[in-house]
Image (cartoon, rainbow, N blue to C red):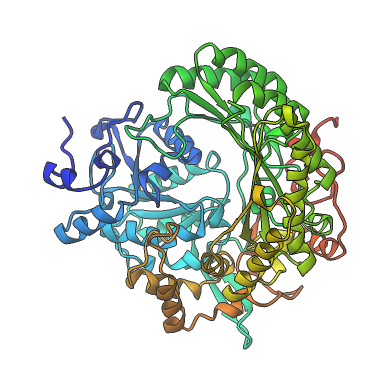
Length: 621
């Protein structure tokens, strides 16, 4: 029997003790005597969020298939347990073995969103690992960061020993072999980091140095150790059918955010929306073989007992074998009472036909993401969607029995004018009008159109990485313009409008495009009590403002200026395949409102064709 890290008295005092006891169906236990590397895989948010993340499941499965490696999981303790652990001096532990994280060889942290940065420090702190990599001794785990936010690792550079840039299925085996060799030869922690930095895709922040100009922009960014590359190249899996995939995903004891089997059908996206970081980072688009997916679906449903299966993709409608896969799932799942979830579909006749077969039309709502209200703005962002497309899709949905539609928009996009903001309300009203064009006897009650707007954040490696952001007050003023425009619409009783928190947007902007100096503010915010910033009930904007002020980090410098064409970005040393020249060209096309065709219509020369795979070679000999 495993001995739990928390005694019964503590477990009875805290909310949802099942978050911390491990032992779930399909979790992996190994004999410590047969293990030479212990890897703690961390998602720095609460269990229910972390357990819903497919990337962790993939890496957990991959590591545990390796001989001599035991990968376990750790999540951020919720605030109730956090307080108890500090008071009782209980070190943070892994779920499987319940052993302290500080006794592991590696702590791998997936960094999915900026608002979890203070939670990363919470995990290190509760583990007894020094927050700054420069203060870690020989007996500390090697702390690795990965995931989408690792593509601008600089705000977190002081806290990580190394970053893994790219998809996890590629060079981890080589990295662990280097670690074993270094240990066998009696090498130091620094020896390992220098060796690791020479592996393609591995970035060791302590082996690089930045200098700054008088205006605060970066003057240079270079390695400080011989043999360490000046450019770190993203690692990418080209044959998606040969990678490992979790056939026996862990089944949680409690309900998590996505309590279902997840089938990743492809990586990447052909669309080229200019605001979308994932669409650039995960190029080129690569599909999984449909027969392989069918087999995964069968195995995962059988091995978990889940009652829902979901397709995972940035744009499911662009998967070339979607019809065959969906028809298979309908045949396979319907008789067994298994629900099918189909996110990221374009709303067209095929999708609506499929959704009517797998959803309860009367209960569910459909989601459209026009992103902008006016056609001019949709062309600026290269959305590839016309008003006619939106109204036709909505009309087909209404004819099919749906009466609830969610519309997602962004405010604060480059070149946005007042008319573009007001056009959000006008478009929502046009969707409602389309509903009321249906004869009354064929309508399904009143329609409900819910429009939501987030505030645009220019992300690294997008054509909009040069764009400026605005102040908190300016964002609120823009939302007010849209709100007033909704009140002027004919069908206002059928329309609802809400918007994202502007304070969170301002902070995300600094963290997304910051450099190493921003790390001082993150550390100060954590020390002042900031954790779980992604949770509105815990987010404290005033503490963050005080942290920026105390550390001399100027929000306006990072957010409220358009970047120069020749400015060195903190992430410029990373090669994601997509070239900076292409991104700049797309920025200039955006300023002219010019649309760029998607990857299947025409190659735009973004740079990723050098990998000679995926959509780049489809239909070519």
